[in-house]
Image (cartoon, rainbow over all chains, first blue to last red; front, side):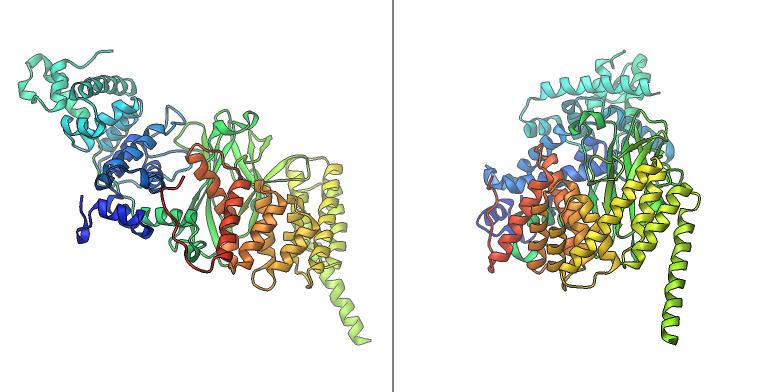
Length: 181
Length: 195
Length: 219
């Protein structure tokens, strides 16, 4: 992965480990929003996602010396964020999306019609009822647009097992949406 | 509970199109596509994230030059109190106080907007009483938020020190277990808010 | 003679107007019994240069909480005592204390700091930061559970390291941030531990003139 000025992730990571710690900012800038949407759909709230991404960056810094493949910092970072998203405890099964206790509600997007906003809310709510693994495969494929092959590579698993997970997710979502209606 | 037909699942996976489905599965196929259409793919961005991460790292590393440097942008302080870590007797009341729009530094005549939040699922009514409203629970009721069990109120308070407590169902005075607490002189505790 | 009359008149007027303030603020909120006691304590406090507001607040609070009058009376006398003790502790620090600082000192005593702690904090504050602000911050830290000795040490270190009032004011939030970051990582960090961390950092800052380059990746 390379960025502005041609410095690869690996070069930046090695510089940081050699003592030029301020350069971590380059990695944060580079990948700040890369998984923001993934975290938001996994956790159901932009605020929770921001906290999770922030924590993941801090944790990645702490453990930077343990990053085995500095040229693939972003892949390693993704796993840290993923663990953080999976570990997030949901306070209540009825958490409304875009609103967690104490968080300021996300601003309304005027260009989205009310009916569509409501259906999005309903689907996000249903997604939160899935297991984190089911939710993740759905988010990676249908939100992030990855193919089953790409997901399998990233999660170090097989396409058939992903499909099985996804198909269960489809059925549970259908059930949840019907229950909500 | 009725599962999607396997062919409809292939449709969802993008391996088939609606036209590929037999007529008796069309309706189910359309239902499935409506489900996918409700997926929120809007990009999400965190403009303030670099500053927050770097400030956190600097603070933790103790670098001499920026040890006490604060962010220029308005500062958010989130107190996260997880209900299950609290003393069980007080588990009903986990109050989160979120400070919004706090200019830095705070001049003497400035005000700060504060959002008081209380998790009290059994309550019928919740109020806030403190030095800023003459301890009048009628003055500041909390309202239910969209999240079950969570009550909130937003106040604009002058900078300075304030004592407060929540009043549940008009009679039960509850201090905020997550906030600093002082003896109220009457055998109970008040919470302290420093702005 | 004329001067004496004028100053007496002023003294009487100011007592009278503050008596009216007290009555106005208590009206409808406290029982006549409590109001009379507040009046008495307030007049005496004002004459000694002590703030009256803490007494009024405590009376209103007690009544709002449905506390019986005799219990409120006990609390009011306790506040009065704390105001006196705070004023004395501040005088020990060597300046004529203002009512703001006395109120903050009384609050600090209530939060668990000692007279000596109040004196020390006042001494350290002058002249670089506001005594009242320092005392309020220390009270908040103590109220958060940071032991008194540690509270005084941390605040002193920050001020002596050249910290501004704004930096002192940020201390409770810094300690809280340390606690909540610990929770975010599934660790229980107490306010005392978070404060200790800040103290170590402040001491390091004071002792190391050069810039150190910390290594990331350390446990």
